[in-house]
Image (cartoon, rainbow, N blue to C red; front, side):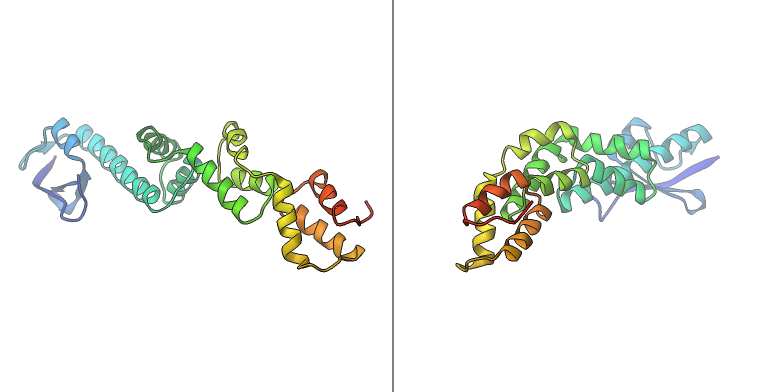
Length: 206
């Protein structure tokens, strides 16, 4: 039988209670779990209760880690879940924890998608590259359309890119071909690139 030696609030983590057990074991639980299990110093813990407490302590630790991750930078639910799994969290528990933070509003995939779109648009990237980033960061596809609607007109972004590269110079055919390839790598479609090249009065061959 395992016995509780003492209980005290954590000095370093808010809303965390330290439960010291015989044998040197330590449980880190929440005040709510302390009340739910009605824990007291000197209390003997049956094996099934100790197992449940250990699960509760593990869940609390996972939630603490997840909250800290989400507090440091914006993440999608998938990114957060993947990071927890890398730290050793069970995949199902990781997904449930990410959903828990989403329910609290601490993780917001729709808002994150908007941030990604605005960031890459400001860097001069096109829709294709932005879609790659949304996919890479685990943003659900059903959120893509609304987020991508925030992209500026490709014509404006392409003209800005060309103006910065050419600096008033008249491009030859080889230069236009290089610029066209660069624009495609940045996520712009040929359908949007071609009119911009036509505005320069010369186009590369297809």
